[in-house]
Image 1 (cartoon, rainbow, N blue to C red):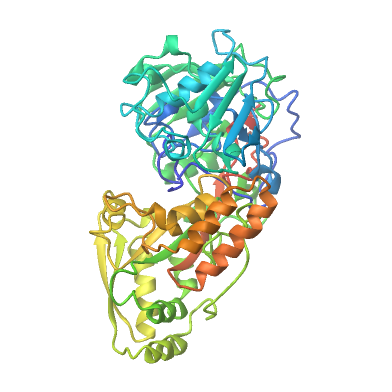
Image 2 (cartoon, rainbow, N blue to C red; image 1 turned 135 degrees about the vertical axis):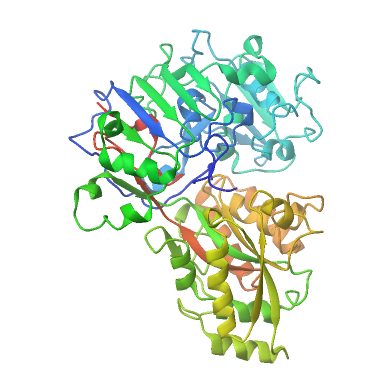
Amino acid sequence: MRRALTLVLPGLLLLAACDGGGGGSTSASGDFDPATCQGGTLTVLNQGGITHLDPARLYTSGGGNIPSLLFRTLTTRNRQPGEAGAKPAPDLATDLGTPSDGAKTWTYKLRDDVFFEDGTPITSADVKYGIERSFAPELPGGAPYLRDWLQDAASYQGPYKQPEGIKSIETPDDKTIVFKLSKPEGDFPFLATATQFAPVPKAKDKGVGYEAHPVSSGPYQVESYEPKKSLVLVRNTHWSSKSDTLRYACPDRIEVTAGLDAAVINQRLVSGAGQDANAVTTDASVGPEQLAQLGNGGPLDKQVARGEFPATYYLAFNTKKAPFDNQKVREALSYAVNRTSVVNALGGSTIVGSSTTFLPPQKALGYQQYDHFPAGDTGDPAKAKAVLAEAGLTNLTIELAHSNSDDSGYGPKVAAAVQEAFKQAGVTVKLTAIDDATYRDVTGKPATEPGASLQYWGADWPSGGPFLIPIFDGRQIITAGGNFNLAQYNDPQVNAEIDAINALTDQSSAQARWGALDEKIGKLALTIPLAHEKDVFLFGKNVKNAVPDGWRGTYDLSRISVK
């Protein structure tokens, strides 16, 4: 998925994740103590509009920054800096779930001390109903995994049309919920962080109108909400820190303003005038003007948080189209690419790093370093020409599709950098610009997919599965559209290894095998990894504990203080 998970739109894409080692400042002024941090108003300045506030319609695996203030889920992010933050932790549930039947059944027990904003105890039926709502066609946009993972749920149309519910979700009592899966899924505790696992009281459900005032299970509740413009949150008095030790819930009030220009946001955070001293952003990365002021020991260095969301910029090949059905051609272009020029086109080494692996360099994903086509950061045109000669090809001309917007990360600047690098290897590249609004539609439908295109992929949670499966599992090929396996690669042995890894509940074992699988697939040059994302965010001078978590690479609003 693109970084900006559905609640707060691009500038980042959402849903998910990182183990980049944390980094950044823990406080802009004074020491931070979660026991005494309560008070004040936090301002959030964002580019993206708040398009939806219904947990069924939010694609925020890991509990995206704003949704996690309102909604608790069965599990959540561990909310720690560094590697520890790339793990799930219990939230509404007492633990990460008990697997049985070879990880095809997952059982959760709810805590006794969890309540909705009106004081009503949260039950397993509320969690089940919240999940079932996310299947309703009237409420699109949520994570799609459960439709595939749950037994006999693929055709379910939600409780409004099928009130009998999903039989593979069982609630034998008010505190127990059981999930019956069609195949083993060791990553289920990661998925259980998604907002579709937030409880919804059936009596308060108003269908598409529910998001006007969703019932809170988290530390804050909605005071006012104007779609795409603003959101004001105040304390939920029935939430208790004793039942939720991961969310500090420091500010008394949180005011979100959306639809702002990124340059304006960063300037306001730098100047820190008035309430802007207590401000942060969840989707406006540091711009060129501010980057130039960082790293010299100046005052702005104390107002910056650095992390890494696990995401890769890459060039995708459609192996069903000539000449990309020829592995030698793909290998030659892999030697030719100049990653230094790509990094510069994306904004420089402060915000991206060059990549030779599809998995970004984070342990949680199973990252293993490899470089099957070593050419240095600037490419090896001579080697590329030699490999093309082996294939009997000279004066090769190819087409490369890209977005018409540089804001996408795969726009004209990156395309021009790739074009020039391939030119040095004797390959002529004809660039095809596609409107950013339809780019995924065109490239994601095999009938209209170009031979080569620039792409970006980020993990829904910090594991190799959601990174490699959509891109390389042959069973994920969708001919009607929405396809991400752009190579249209279908290897039964690779598919079987994916299934075997999915069955593992030990994450260390899974990590090692995801990394090995990435290395194996990389030899085929189905993609050319170009760069991995780094994240640099500013925060106001009065903000404390703005530490990037190990899941998404940015600071956590539920742990920030402005007191």
